[in-house]
Length: 139
Image 1 (cartoon, rainbow, N blue to C red):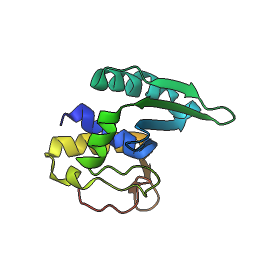
Image 2 (cartoon, helix red, strand yellow):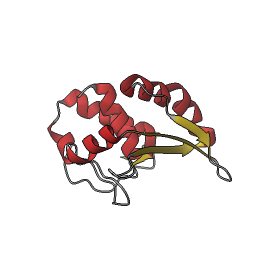
Image 3 (spheres, rainbow, N blue to C red):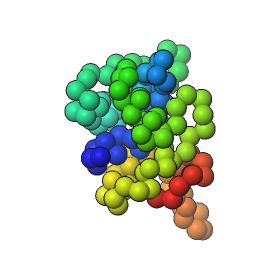
Image 4 (cartoon, rainbow, N blue to C red):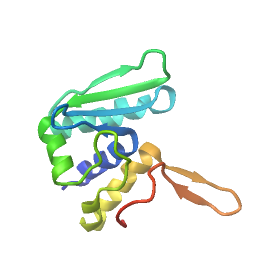
């Protein structure tokens, strides 16, 4: 696994969803104002480079959201069967195999997850968090 692919997986876990074998769709959505530049200048070129496709991007009607999606049966099957990636309406959690990858891969994954959904709060005691609930595995 490359660091670029691991980064993509982190973004996908944070901002996206994975379909099923019947509906092999990869879907990512972010805030129209805050994340459109990230999607247009980082995520879409990354998807194009990794998978040799041009994902479909659009502004969601009636919402302040920007979406990117593409179909890939092979990718969905790999994510679900080999990486234990959450798919469909299941609760999101860290894929178990991620804990066993080399440190550079795990860090790229965390960077992608943080770029999609991370935050740092500086009250009396700083906290770092994402919107992903308690994981099944440790990174």
